[in-house]
Image (cartoon, rainbow, N blue to C red):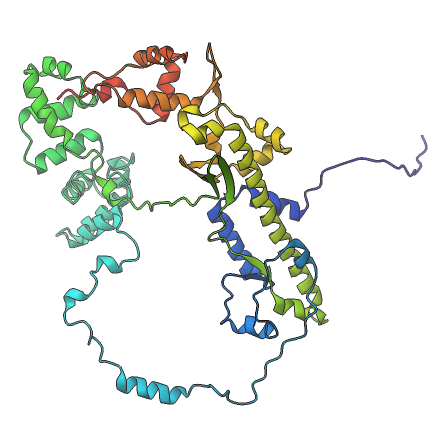
Length: 490
């Protein structure tokens, strides 16, 4: 068989993800905080980018560039970015001391002679801020325990074991799953030595720290507060599960005590803290800044983007004027092209968020008028078809974006819910059903809480037919306990 070479023409289509397109997709799914961080990084790496807010009239560079104009630069548009500036080069003219130049030596000498002595304002140490007010971060549970370990009378070898134990205590104050045997092997000591140090740590603050389970945590607190009578200790050691379920009758039968005695002991146990380490939680509060506002003026709603805190990017006039040079022309062109695309991508991101929000407003208008119970079923495809975009784009837009409404602040994904079919009337969103379940439970008698089946029956009266397991699932998602655990016995 002979071999030969041929030339064939073939026409095909394929999607090429350019770096610019990848950047636009990345910007679309970033949260507001992540977007600000990314823009700050780009401003550090790209000298062509400037924040128009940070450049005031006192900025020397801005004064040097805009010396022929007293007005501030207009907002950057796509046309303005694409066209280079043809203004003249700015030059510094410092051929001698300016007329208003300050004599720093004379100024410092006069300042030293006239300045009050240090501490002349405060007359006592009471006016000084406390040590806690000068700390840069809150004290963690581990730091608090290590400080107490250093202040204890343990030997150096025991303190090394204590460091190992503290490292195995979780944020709630419990020793992690790592058994005592493993810690003894790692510290190269006996199990009794580890047990002795652990018992010492269990006497540290907060009370109950260092326990290996809930029963031990409750017992440590009972001993500390002098409440370790026989009945209470038996309840903690043998019936912690029944205490959690509030099955006091079973405890009374097993311990052969009256129900009143069990109630009195249970009241004491309820006052104990099951998670002693949570008061030293190092979690910082996360404040939500909405990306979009919906304002109601009369009978109309208006969608307004929230640009507060976002850098107002512009192209530096200084580097525009430097484009005429030959040495760095290619470098500046690349940076200018990158800055132009970033500004366009951010503007496109804002426009897309506004479009999606306006579409949500159209579908969920009753929610903005009447509240969560009037939320309608909505899927990504509905909004995608309404504004002519792909579902994946809608998914990226609604990720980690928040909307400020007359009803409160909600994530954009909140408005997308599956539907619950009703026999008569329109379908109801699952979020609206959760709201109704929460309302039913909030109105119940605490001593006779509704079971899941009772909640199902009440929902049927409102023409909402769902299964009992669905009610249990929604209740767990809302963080609501079962009826047996919600019941108030005393």
